[in-house]
Length: 258
View 1 (tube, rainbow, N blue to C red):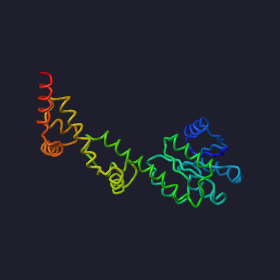
View 2: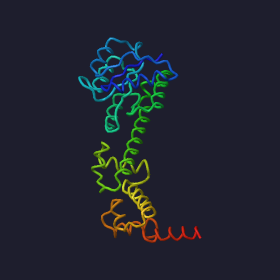
View 3: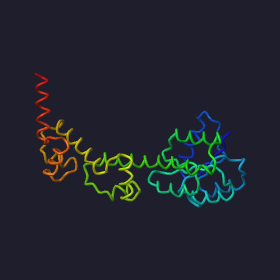
View 4: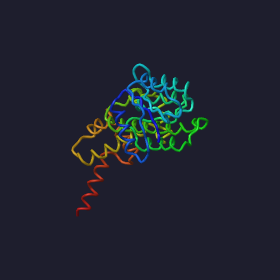
């Protein structure tokens, strides 16, 4: 039996965790579910290490936040397994969580597979405190992957707007220099190159699906105010101008039809 306590100020998150764990092929008992750190600590302070196996706590909570709760717990149950629960925009908190020796870092919305693996670790007792520093690198890498995917999603959605790295970084919740290095490390591409790829792909689509559009209109629709620059960039990447690309497609289509 895995005995867990949940601390999160969002009731829907607490109920969701209880529902997910109840449907797993593991014996899990939620011994407490609280909307703030203080209430969780009041219960925890009365327990021994034999009474609880895992604490899952949010970072931002009223009355006592997640880090304060962890500090209190560490003073009483140094080896208790703890998982931090947080949204992607609060990813920087992962570093503080690591220093507190947490076992895992769960991102909202909860990944059922990651939660299952966490519970299996606790159940099997394979994770010991001297080994936790290595173990927490995995949730950090998972968090970095999530941030990169979120960055891609933003670029794919807002490709037609003027690109500002600082605004993107603010949306993701990281510094511009950090997100730039992270994106290049994880994808092998700079953010700018990735954005250009999206814009050129969209331009190709417009050239074929809306052939009556002028060159400057297509340029504007994919985020370029200067049609001359767009024309040069398109030719550099595709080997032909937008006009020739459209003409070549039409010619190939005509040949096929005849």
